Length: 474
Image (cartoon, rainbow, N blue to C red; front, side, top):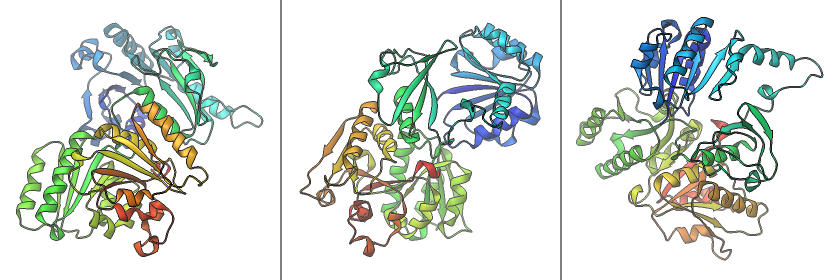
């Protein structure tokens, strides 16, 4: 988890901190320094990934005493006083000359620091006037106001250890995305086939949003980010009235394992219909661990409370027993977060990840497949059944390209003589990834006549299944 330093003061800083808190894929540790109590939202001080210090950031000695600035990935300075901004910038540069700085400038003074290769100036006046110019008839619209705003344009900084470093742009030519420009030392380079990518370059990526997210992960070469971008925590709802002890022990055991394995901050557990039992005593003990938070609910007896919990606690994945999921899958669908249903055995014993390419399959959940598989240490198996279906070959090619980006093994099983569901019904120890769309809501009796293999998911329900909603619905 990366450490970010934010030096804040004024109404702009307050709005920024509120937005940072609301972002679902906030997975960093934030240290906030401010002399202005009004700009710090009160709830930030209780958040596990926010540390707040209240003092004047122009004091060099106090800055030194807070933390070793070398530990921070970058620092963002948002102050509403010109002199304070100047002094704070100079002090940080004395303490740590190479710390990546982002400086908000509404006065125009920062231009004289443009020689600082580790400084990015956010010129508020220039951005605002550029947007206003864009409203004039026949005027060009610049990069800050281009596109649909769905993530089809992205800027990514290349880490020193990235697999993209020292490679030619031509090595990454794909139909789904392009690298048209590189920013290096405050200059731009229009790329050619043989343009070399260097560490600390910022790449301008243009393409399909879902593809760009995959490329971003590949460039950063970080440990998996899931459950981001859906959220930063895991969630489990337990109905003790309708749960047997062996089922309880299994779901708690696997929830603990996933909480230790995935890149989440905390596991939230909501207990409904609590009964006096060893199960209740066991789940209460989890509150002693800071990575768990348990709510014993004596009022709500139905899982409708889930939606409120998901939004409040930035949940990125829900765990559920298969029977509970089937009984309430429409409620789960409207949560718009991935849902993992438990199968036979324990998740730590799984051998592979499975995707079944059907006639209407998409690549929407592809980045989640490789992210989760990487965190669980599983190879990916793509079952490619009907070779006559238009578009299936492109899907296979897409997954092959993605496996190269993520450096994960991909096994393509393209036996068109055997339905993959019939094959997998005889197997166990795998996790199946499925798009969580309206097809999943259909009744089993209706789906049993379908040729869409996703609708037949229930035939493999004895195995682990991860239902992944569309990114665009987050």
